[in-house]
Amino acid sequence: MRHISKLATALSLIGSLIASSALAQTIAITGGKVITNTKQGQIENGTVIIQDGKIAAVGAGIAIPDGATRIDAQGKWVTPGLFSPLSGVGLVEVSAESSTDDSRAGDSEFSAALKAADGFNPKAEAIAITKIEGMTRIAVSPSAGSGIFAGSGFIADTSGGFNSISKHNAFMYAEMGERGANIAGGSRPAAWAYFRAALAEAQAYRPGRKNDDALLNSADAIALKPAAEGRMPLLIHVERASDLMAVVRLQRAQPKLDIVIIGGAEGWMVADALAAANMPVILEPQSNLPGSFESLGATMMNAARLNQAGVSIAIAQLGEAFNARLAVQQAGEAVANGLPWDVAFAAISSTPAEIYGLSGQIGSLANGMRADVVVWDGDPLELMASPDHVFINGQAQALVSRQTKLRDRYMDLSNATEKPFAYR
Image (cartoon, rainbow, N blue to C red):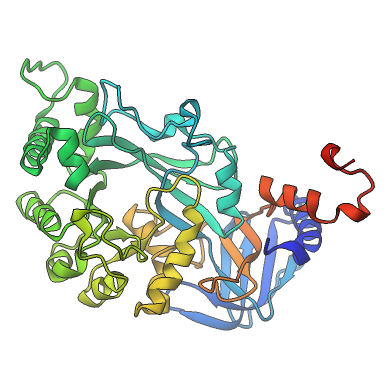
């Protein structure tokens, strides 16, 4: 409901930008407070030049190319597009209808071989909802079903295009802790025995060599091999401090593994060990209630304490197929509980890009980067702020979703020339 007064103007300008981009391919955003996520820091009264889908220049007092389409951002904030580091966006349309839910496969004979990209629907309603809140990139993961390895996740933009996936097999997701124990046979020792054996099998796997006692079928072994050899990030969901230490011990035993922690509700208890192991944590700062026995030590100070210890953090609305956009609110809450603003903003923009090996492409405003840019009407971490303009790869995006269309349809029925059927 926050775009009401600006919708007509925004749609008109977006239409002209889309038309002009096909001709000039040059856009100048001027006069705003520019958040670069680089050594340039924050630039007051700054200018961002977009040309041919990339950032051509960032700074103050930059000359505007002739023929450029100008956007006046005076009094506004200009930032890189936001990046949700983990979600199920595009895998679920209606959670209560199983035929629209491709997030997990509880009855499948495959686990690690499952590819979330095969179930992605870029036209899902949640894509537009995510985009109009300033999120231009999403890391999408499957959920564990029949095995502790859920499968591989992917990276996509939120343009809604059928070519929006930029990295199909971006990471492998594994479920440990309480749920992993349940899946693996009923205990954490069972889960860790399976986990270590599966990694060893994947590392040793060679095509044509058949092992009658193998835990993994060949498809799962092939899919797990890149993560088992450290060539793909391995995301491990754990919450309890003792489970986190088990992951630290795994990292010490196999230093080539590229491990990323998911959750880490009790991470503050072992923050120094996590920092020494150089393992990033994707967390939910608002997780402060003991929803399970593995998160009895949850606190809203978790993000600040992990950062203070030197742990790289990214912020997500975990377990969400519809509200990944709320990671922005999560970041704001983290600031309210001691996390520095620049760290919180990086946690939903440049840090996820670093985690997935994309820091040279997205997450910052610098020459040569993909032009994922958002112009906000205020501080993006303030709850009431919202985007006025969103660009993905230099293309202006319509800030429209099914919800905004319904809002507009029913907002002023007294003056409607043609009322909806039920109101006639």
